[in-house]
Image (cartoon, rainbow over all chains, first blue to last red; front, side, top):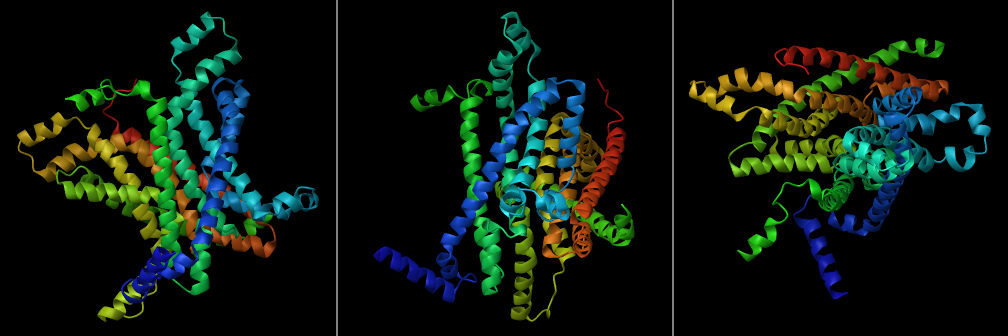
Length: 261
Length: 229
């Protein structure tokens, strides 16, 4: 309690004298920013999870499916990769209400008139399109020898996919996926344009309410930087674990030797 | 379809704003990117660190946050500086300028990574040979580094450009009357937002399709000396 008061007094002192930023105001609204961060993380990771579930079968169909399937999925991914996420979100949130049938359907009340659901649908379809394409690339670069060997062992196509192709494809796609996670997080700011209170939404609210120019945006920015830092650390750890066999020789074994030397 | 045709004037105007915003930001981003790439490759540690922190910073902050900070915060800061120093009066940062500055700054960081990789891909011996032949640093850049850098950087450059075009849509959020803003206004007055948003998606696909064709032509030109497998 004592330390908190002195810290608070220090904040107030700095805000009133030297700093152009009002730290007291930021401190007072920190719980709102944490709420905004939770909203951002929730949207990002739900979209990534659902998008990933959609992307795996689509990537397999793109790589091995019958000719027609691959083209149809390509049309979907091309359309979603070639257009801005903002417009896709507007299309779902503002656009769908244009149709009488949609407004009268049972989905309208609970789902399609709610910005949270519209944003989630748009984000999911968007990230699924990108994930499908690089996963397809990873699946196609499976060494031919591995597939031949698994056929020679008598594996069925399903077992082959489950035990041979997908595990190594996921590994190869890991660096590209870390970019996709960060881009999805960056894209999630679009939620604030359809009235959702994500991190940027809270920042805009704070600036609008107290007529400020920096505080809300800078606080949101610091939060985003922290989240990105955390995500890249997690991916670095994952790459260390799952891509261990791809690292140059000696990089791993050299450490204990150096420690003794 | 009839409806879109009626509003073609406003859509075309918006498209013009979008394309000019994208092209100007691209030019700024190439300048930022070249500076960043050479900073990251510099032999001086301080400059190298500055270049690295530029690219790390940009990659960790969402573009819209930076854009709003520059548009709202930059305006206040400029006017505060003007008031304190008495050098200039009230300045209005318009949305177009804020958009160009932000997008140029952001994509400069991605371009820096692209150019850095491309410069590193040029065999070191060629630069050494050019130095041994007595070329000046400017000559080395114009005759040796640049033509090959373009070739190596082009695939990633194309990708950056396509992402940049899509990012211009965000400028409508701070109120620039670009393609998205105009279509949104038209859609709201006619209560046909779905139709207009589909039209916008289609226009973006056309723009990206055309730039794909142009960049493929540039690629053919710059890799004229490369044997294709």
